[in-house]
Length: 111
Image (cartoon, rainbow, N blue to C red; front, side, top):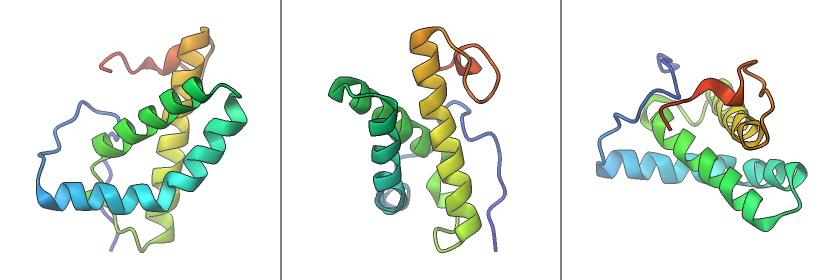
């Protein structure tokens, strides 16, 4: 069964519980390698890469990984897509470009 999806970039309302922390850690282990590879492709600067990875971690927490079945290829692919878009939007925002969402700087003013 796949989780119901809501706006993954909505302001954080995820309570800090043992379940949410464990789900975050499990999800991050699944996506970390591809997020790191993406950050490396986007910038040669280690500081920029760390900023992008922090965006991905914040996006993952806001997406509330407890809502996803991490055994599901579809759910994991969706999380990848959300996190890559968040990183790309943050990168574009820093440089005054449009991200894949088509909005200036990603339009996530709540960060």
